[in-house]
Image (cartoon, rainbow, N blue to C red):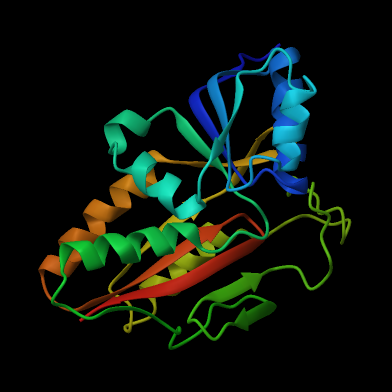
Length: 244
C-alpha cells in the first residue's frame, strides 16, 4: 500500500454540492488511510450550506472537518498572508464554478503595494492553442482542451474517458510555451490543479503566496503584464495582470 498523502490543511472552496462531495471523498480517503490531514476547512458564507448541515448530522465522522463561515476572498487573503514557508503542506480544493480567486488575490495585493499605479485585468492579446475558449467581459479568459461536456468527477487520466484515446494534452506546459512565444507578456504564474486522492483535485498553496513575491519583483522593474492561470490538465481560467 502506498504511503498516505499528508497535509497540514486542506481548504475546500464552497460548502454546496461540489464542496460537500469533495469533503465526503476526503473523509473516505482518511478512512482508507490514503490521506492524513491536520484540518479540512470548508469555506462558505452560509452556515447552513450542505457541509454545515452534514456536519451537524455527523456525516464526516473520523475526519477533522470544520466549516469556516467567511467569504472566499477574505479567507484566502488571511490564509495566504501567512507566507510560503507556513503553507508548504497546505492544499486548496477549488470549485468548478468559483471565480478566478488566485488572480483576484494578486490584483488586490498589487493595488495595496502600489496604490498610485494603475492595476487591472486585461484581455489576452493573443489566445492559447486550445480547441475551446471564451473571453468574458471582465478580462478573464477560459480555456479547455475538451469540446465536450466533462463529468465533474473526472480525474483527467492518461486515457481520456470521452475520446477513449490517450490524453496527449496538458495545460501547464502548453501555457508555458504560449507565454515564451508571446512578446506581449513579461511572465506567468501558473497554478496546476492535480487530482490527488479519491477524485479530489488540489492546488499546492505555497506557490500561490510565492507568486506574489514574483509579481512584486516584476512590477518593481516597471510596467509589466503577467499571465495568471489556475489550470488542470484539461481546463483553465486565465487573466493578464497588468501593472502600469
